[in-house]
Image (cartoon, rainbow, N blue to C red):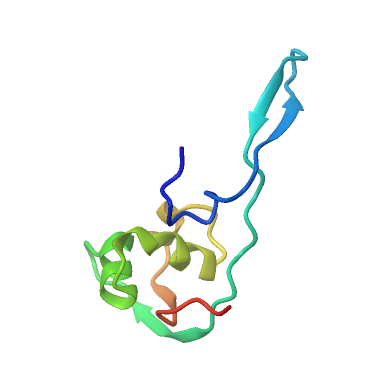
Length: 93
């Protein structure tokens, strides 16, 4: 279901009951990664989160790390920000 690089890939689904009493499998929240601050990027018109992630992190699918660093629920929220905090390329262990 998840890409093997996803932080959700190794999480075990849990079973919960929905509003109608049915049992459904859900994926729990993944812990936020430990990221150190690299700098600030001032967004220009037309710049997308995946392009910024490709440039700064060498991984266009790492746009979620920019969102996480900005405490944004989704990458789309980043489009409203003028300044975006950029994490270091490598995650801390």
